[in-house]
Image (cartoon, rainbow, N blue to C red; front, top):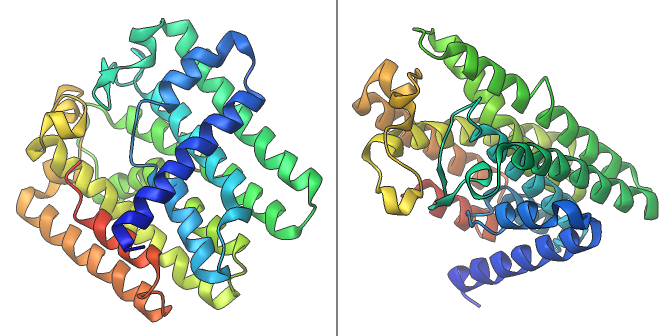
Length: 292
């Protein structure tokens, strides 16, 4: 199976597993809005890099699957809440009406809350049934990354920065937490479950940090220059919300150059781990060239 076919196969597996876990854990009252949001599409980037990193180090990805599904539940909950009128007030997500438009605002809040709780039910069930330190470490990693010292912190900083001229340090603090921490947790959890050494984890954390910043810079670029149909939401949404971005602070040329430099260092570090013949390398290389 070639790399592209393998990635499509893995994406199908992830999508099937997400719905399997949702059917098992979701109460009937909230099933439809949670299913709607989870099925709205997306690259499944975070579960994919977790599974592929685990597989690259251990030769199999199955042990990481509950954590990959949990990560996508957490990411989806964050998108539901991010789209709310009290946050970014977006009507479209991945080309479809956002959860609060499809249902209503209260239902969207509860759907997000439900997905966050389901994520931890899934992970704790895995730990309860197979008590290993690597699973405990993975849960802790995800909890920190998604909490008030991670993604939620980044969202709070992002809201506070609206309409203000912020410094480079403040912008990177937003990017590192709002986007970067979940990316870090995804790669790191895959490595932890896959049996990475302390030395490998240090390099993997650097990969994740640079990839997270690069990912956000690319989002800022695509918000201006992207194809609305491919992106699945209106262009210039950051401008509409009066947000400072990498592009607004540094300009398009520097943003593109810095993105290329960060991306190049990510691939270099993967080669340093001797992973350039693994699917994780080819997947991240393809991701770097994304247009949505």
